[in-house]
Length: 131
Image (cartoon, rainbow, N blue to C red):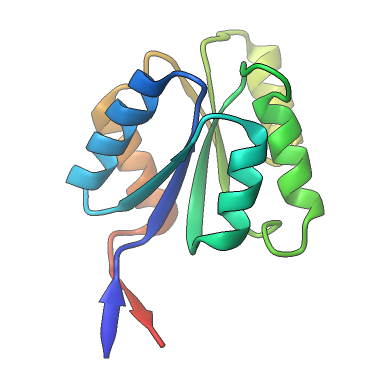
């Protein structure tokens, strides 16, 4: 019987944000994969065993809200919880994220402990059995 860590996809156009989030989540026991845009994220979400997606709202081209909508319309990805990560601090933006189907909203700059806690709450830290 083999096991693997739960995989989290981090989507942000800023490499430093992807790296920092990945380090926090790896330290908490998760496996991470990263994408810097909508297209890469959709591809990875369908190819990798992704259990959670962190999506930045403001990216060139399609936004995190566009990604959330497209994930919900694809049969292979509609079940994956998505956390919207935003620098926008208005209640209207948080409400839009939740109405769009986001599991939660994190405001930048994201606190590492808050990120770890959210991932553990949404996914737990147990390893997954690999068939």
